[in-house]
Image (cartoon, rainbow, N blue to C red; front, side, top):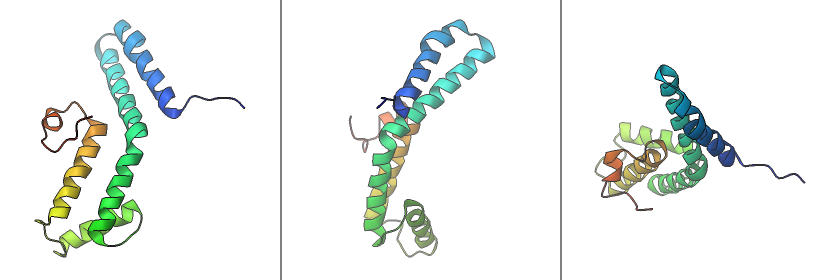
Length: 126
């Protein structure tokens, strides 16, 4: 059996190559695009590392909030439908918790250095 690097290991290796070896050699627009590529790869790495757990937690919160099971997409559509129909109150505590937790999980993957995220009283310290 041949061992293979994981997707996370591959993405991390490419990002590190861009950051440590390519970017120092680049200038102007090319350097900017290399930073964009490195940032995109960092997002992919965080998604690979934390996205599954974030999706599971979101799915569990939605099942509890809506009182039924389904795919994550189906449950999110149902939540939107219920909010539009005023079938779930906007001041519902479980809805607020769900929205905060889902947003924080998404920002943790997409933009973990965002100052609003860093200073959020709801953010879990890692």
